[in-house]
Length: 185
Image (cartoon, rainbow, N blue to C red; front, side, top):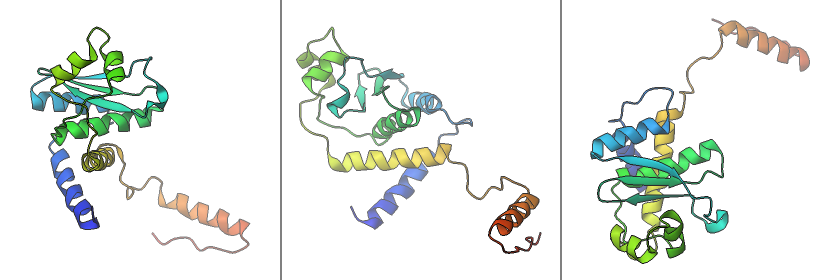
């Protein structure tokens, strides 16, 4: 994907998420509720089972059932990373990524211990193949755009009074043996 493709996707994704008016401070659960309401079906956040091998390379997963969506995420990581994992999976939902993939049979057995893994794959309507790199790139970009849109504070907002900057300039000047004139107001 070239730079122009990325710019076009980013613009499309910003328009896609503007439709969600969420309370501040942002909580990923609020976005889940908004997506569930838009889709008209429950969306459940679930931790990956403890039995899931940490080194399996899977941080999260979206499982779409006929009447509900389930997003699994790794709990053996930091809260910001968990949020990003969930946003990545929500991106797959928002982008309506339809894969013909199913998780590894061992993973299905851990997620749904009461179901035969082959039955779980049939219920999901999926066969075992690999996810497309393009879809993973798109989901990662949308997750990053969502993170910035909902969580990042604008860098241009002043966080201190002008006299604080003047004081800091004088202190720095004193340590560097130079005089720094105060900023004009």
